[in-house]
Image (cartoon, rainbow, N blue to C red; front, side, top):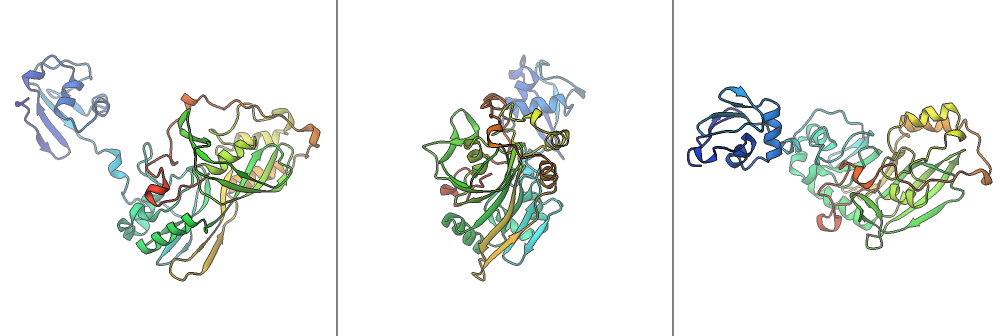
Length: 368
């Protein structure tokens, strides 16, 4: 392969196929010449017309015989945008020189990961406060799932980050959530069940005796015909904690595509208004409504609370028009999952990125 003669032309690369690669497919030959790029990435560039052979577009299956002039328009890897500042609006609840409290909307990923390398909260933070480039993970110390809304705190300095991480580890950060679940829960309670990786699906969490301790306290705020509105307080902060614990109670979150159940919607027990509200609700009904912590500079306890997310307000209003059924009229929940394990997509928001173990990284995973 000594005949390869690359020339850098801005974002383009010109190569001459060496004769010892003659007879290979174009994508295979390119992978030999450009081992820093995966074959699938090279195939995608070829398909998009970003690779030309003798000035003409080609296909991955095209044979090369040696001596051809190849131009590759090299595209930046999406990972390169992970820590790029982007002008994305933020709903800032509180800010000073040490911390920043954000009301995160549903649909926003907190930290870049596979499939979500830009447009995240981290990208927005770097634009809003450029000094966060000097703080690990742009000051993020805990997270919310992509489709969970509500409050989270960001450290603006290294000292503040260390202080907040220690509070999370000591479980002194107070976090209150509001959740809407399927079924009728009749009394307040506590779920004390360890959570770990689901052995059948790497993108899911599950009750796992080998997992980490996880404790969720819940209180019934309102009980409706086929749903219950809950207050949830966390003693721990495990990945997907509330979602997994509600599934354990056989009262999964409304709209949860991963920890819900097939056939969960009791159509005949709902009015058309509630059916429409449920069908138009496209995320898990979970909102981080209150956050309390010790300020890292003043050592004073501060607490913030925001309103319930608008889409959850709409859902609640529809539920309030339903008649609460008697105990004997409760419906049974199907235990069939919405999707087969192999159908679950790798997301992240959610949240299965490299923040996998807070004991290794001194960072607390979020629970929803």
